[in-house]
Image (tube, rainbow, N blue to C red; front, side, top):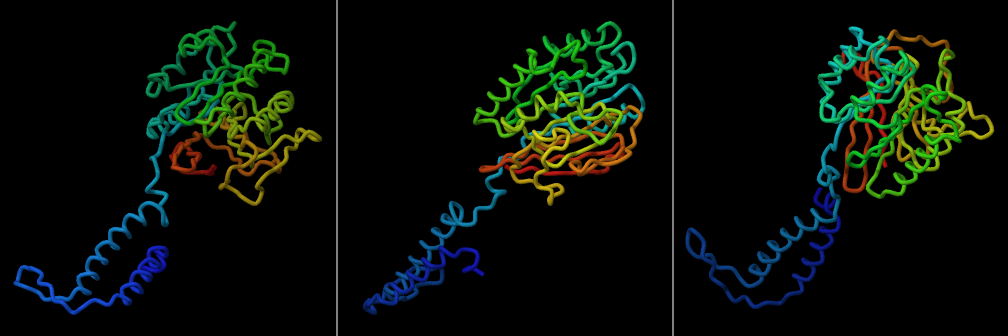
Length: 357
């Protein structure tokens, strides 16, 4: 057992014992004081006792520093948790979603648009009040957040201290980027827009930042989807997915469709943009540093759900259930994990995946 657990130390022991056998010491007796009196041992036995003591200390030090280091021993601890969902409204289901989010004690809450379907945003602001503290809630804007002559839009900007509907921030080792994709005529997002240039420059800076392990984009309109009612946005897909590939975006969180959809890691397909190139198709929920982002639709916060008429081949998991995505970021000495879990409103785990890099 010792040989299997500590092979290098075992070899050292062998060498020392071979050397010890070659020692030719006299049988001169040396008295050692012990609790019951004197014990007479020879010089060879003294040398053996000293050697055993030194080797024991060396074994502990050597094993701790180099041999078979336990990953748990180098773990810096779970850094933080964030949750995400969109298409809330002010219904009982939305209230259940927020209540369950609170139970996860997240440090960040991503609200992915269509926050309130009422003329006033106040019901939704009241709904999220249990988690709306210290800048914890970060939003993107949906179609219904720009109605009523932009009254709700202006209210949200003021409430969340935003100067623009697209923005970014760093939190520990994660870079978050919020895009505004609801209405191009109000907030342009095409490749000639200020937003496009902002996204391009922002992603480059995040990619070059050595302290950032993860880049997460969140938005309203889906880039890819199984639903025909709100299919993937062609312009968004064609302009932005190549940027996501180039600058190493890990997750793209989106809403608009009132259900849950998760793609494989995918890269942009220049030949057929609506059919992305699937990576790691043999893997369902464990990915080691994939070379393309995972797109997740989470329009599940409380609005009436959409059913499916089919499933696109690049989507690995889809269902219609209210709930939210919970993401744990773990930081180790030489790697980081992103662990995503979808909980329905019974706090039952419905989908999960892990990315390691």
